Image (cartoon, rainbow, N blue to C red; front, side):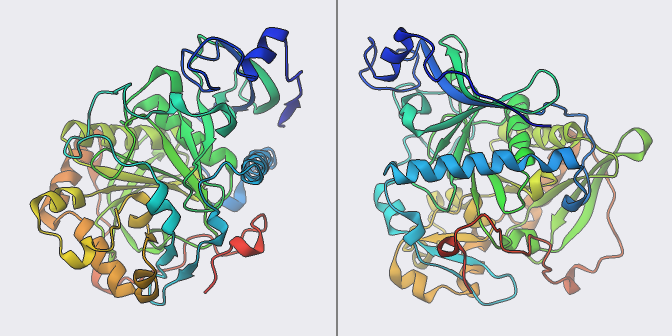
Length: 439
């Protein structure tokens, strides 16, 4: 059962001074070490049990797990509150969105505001691992009004919510904050250990937090994404993104073929498949029967660390409430630098990060939006993809790093596989009607 505990919002006069900005520091209410020696933030303490089996079907969640919808409602309620306060750079609910006709149903959005007001990239794009630079924009400079709540592990394997929790200035907290340049409804940032100033690179503890976030929101329309440096991350401070989209992502509909597996105790393990007949070559990680969240997380993390060390850019999509994770290595920025991407694609100014690669393409010009077709989406994403030869090399790196063995499903004919509808099929009831994607 989820416990809700409400504590006084202000625990002392000094704390009230902090919240009003009446303390020495940088002059604004931010999360930096110069400010906020003590503060109050809501806290969601998640159920920290990495050894819990991964269910094969979202509908089979036990009764107590279904109550994780509290986090779902909390996130949406606080996000809408920030929207009513005018904290976003534009109103994303007014952005035109459509599902492109075709086999995959790629989604196109016209979002001119994001193009004009999004922060520019402030680092070189040819290195996946780069040191944190405190002189560049980072999330310690985010205003406290943009923070929705802390997201931390509980100590008793049960979820808890505290409406106001005193924070000691020495604690490096993990937070969920609004993305002030949103792509979709409920677009947030998950920033692990924000005050530790970690660079944008996957590590075991931080990825586990992201996986727990997807599992505890427990909504198949809510996906968590990650962009490495060189794969169109724009800020070199460790963060994940997440938002709601009430139709399947095309990558979720792509047919797959098992290629690798790791057996655990009692036959439990992790299965890795490759995408078939999709414009971007990629991997899908899933837990086998009886496998745990830790099994799945370890396989993905070990794979990502290997790619980071080999300077291979990649994107991650955590889907199906954390039960399926797509790892998508890419080379678009490298091709741009070499001058081998056609001007037609460069002219659209689309940077194919995790959402675009997954099939939700954010366009910046009305003409491109009006002309959007499955042929265009396929052409763009094909430029993102590794060659077959390079993909096989990466497959070898992943196999070695995650201790996986070749186990190809010979019953599948890749040439005959067509996209299915394995993503969420029912319109999310919590979404306002004017925010739904319409055919």
